[in-house]
Image (cartoon, rainbow, N blue to C red; front, side, top):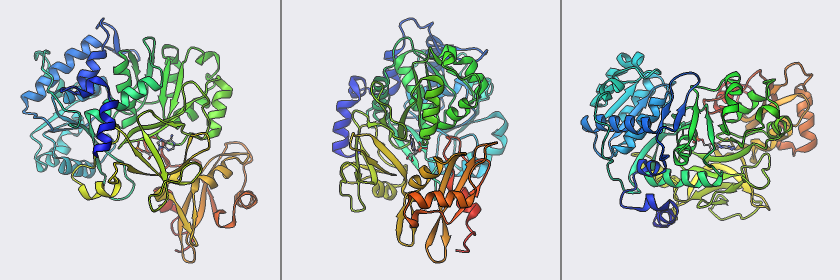
Length: 525
Ligand code: AMP
């Protein structure tokens, strides 16, 4: 981290992160409720976990990890399904001075092999059913201990922690010591491990806790995966700082969420949660009257979804923007206008600028590359100093890879990813601009615009459109005609394809690379 970024960080992360012991776990523990019988995790019909129970389990597990020889900075890789025990494990690793490294349970054996070889964890925790298949990869990567954890808490991890003394000492950590490595899903090239420090995580959690007005009566509905920054850090860390409970669901299921919503006050979700809730007949003003806040992020929330949700429930979804490497960066206001199609203002302590290709600040209204700095911004990619240098400027600003603008009122708009930028016949086309026109057509749910290889133009603008079921949506000629009316010719799609669904990853992001693969031969380019 640059000295500018670290001095901003030290003023930001609060006293706990500034003291000699900046271990994130101690910050959380200082916020646990005095009455430790208060719930932390609530499940749907299963056993929950109180703050007292959490403290004991984290203590036992931290002791187990230290007993396995986990030293400060050692990685603990984890590829398991979501369960309360995964949160215990995360906190125990941090408490024991280790580096938590969660992996998407959908990763294949070959992918896991890469992560283990790259990260060289001392301990690897996997599902009981994958233990034998993954053992050779773990051995080849020099993993000292392979343990298992199942969704009901079964497996060797909990067995070995059982009965240990819960009174473990927290390993002191400096603010810049690593607490976690999260591999970014990167659609091209090798996945990169984003190194997150105790300060990065503490400062972002404190900022969000304040910005979103969390208080003693809040209960969070948590249906997100916990291998990603959204469910692990945004949702869980804010709850821990608040010292209150969360309803912890293995995955998003609209019926289950509607049934449990009356027990919650806040929900954090990806846009697909909201589009699915809109398809649920139970989503009404009355059913959500007790809710304080609905938050969306990780992928763009369609302005239509925002409006429809507000129409049905009278709640304006609060959209925010962030990424693995930086935590959360911007948020629509808690008090103030939440504008559909924008991601709001830079959060306190986050510096955000929009620059042109030469790094010149474009100020308001200019479209360009979004760069950010602050105590929440990571220090670099694990064992990739060259990549780190390419993406963090000497003044500490990280090049997000997102293209956007800051409007006249200071709201940030995301226009697309730099790598999704289409260059057709030498002209730049931002997919979002074309998608906005198509999405507004009667009978269209949403669209994804991509560039396909083309012998003359280099890339040809092409659209993949999802039409409303049962409605008479536009055909290819109608989409093209509508675009011609509103957009310069070079932005008008040359072809339009229709699908019943857009491919999305676990965080609800449209996988444009799959669309480019599928239609790549269209123009013979
Ligand atoms: P990840 O590192 O998986 O969290 O992905 C981060 C990327 O998700 C960002 O760089 C954006 O491209 C995208 N993203 C996150 N939140 C939003 C949002 N509210 N609107 C548009 N894109 C978003």
